[in-house]
Image (cartoon, rainbow, N blue to C red; front, side, top):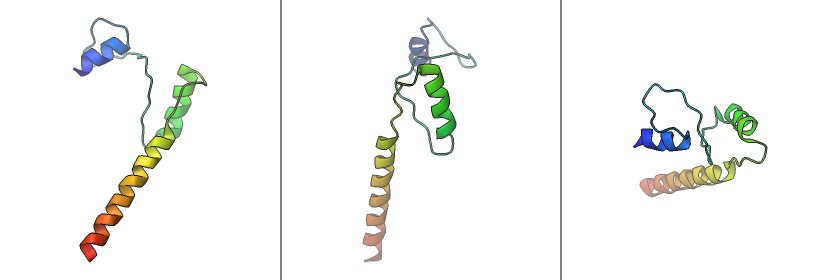
Length: 77
C-alpha cells in the first residue's frame, strides 16, 4: 500500500523499497527536533505559500498533556 501511495505522489507507475523519489506533498508532519530544517526545505522546494501546519500539532500535544495530567490526578485521588 505504501508503494502505491508513493508511486502516485511521485507520478511514477511503480516504486519499490530503496528507490529515491521526489513526491508531491500537501502536508508535512515532523517533530520538534527536525522541524526547523524540514520546514526550510519544504518552503524552498514547494514555495513560500506551502502550508506548514504547526498550530494543529501544538494543540494536539497540549490536549495530550492535559489528558495525562487528568489521569495523574485521578490516580492520586
